[in-house]
Length: 321
Image 1 (cartoon, rainbow, N blue to C red):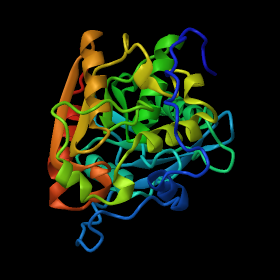
Image 2: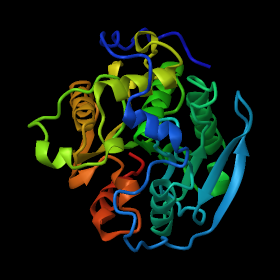
Image 3: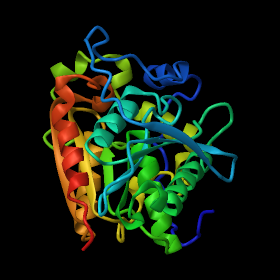
């Protein structure tokens, strides 16, 4: 399914790293398919609005791909969102609070959400399987937009963490294949680079040292995450797998959500700068005091409201030219 137009690939991984056992952070993701625990597990959370939900299956190259559809048919001229959950490619699901709560909130505000249940990179699964599943979900949404009360040209594509990677990788494919593009990309702290650039202004060392291990991203964590997804050395990764190394020219407008206390913030900042240099309109929001996985940790809590308002506002602004 992948065109051969793009030759971009990730640079070779750093040398001198232990290859005998996974680093502690990545190992925790591997050990918990449902995703690591909340940062604040005892908080009282809202379950989110009650909205109509149904599940369909798209035909994919690797078998059926489940899609959970949230919300009533859209109003004429309203956008829709195809969403990819996070989890380092090896954990999380459409049931993750990040995905389910966000989908309920947006659907209750009038934006139907199609949450794609892509296959995880576990038990021998690797790229391009999750990438292909993402495209299967996108093409199904485009084809069936009319029956959902949606304008296919107002469909947006987005995701959190690894889901942000999948969204950008799919958009790069669509550019190369000459297919209709999303009206906008909505990306929450996306994992785009195997070797994270330093965030502008640095990080608060004291605050970062107090975070649980699974919320920190060492170079080893990032390389192992990327290698597991790619199914081999990062140096062999095509741009659809590690889109932070690709030329973003031609991508649609993007809304980027970054977190203040996140080792991966530099990757989001770098991608925002690359988009601007390529002439792609960018909206950027920094969630102050937030850590990686913000949408998951704050699902159903007031602390996540500002980030949801940013994403909802970006969707509401999508209109036909």
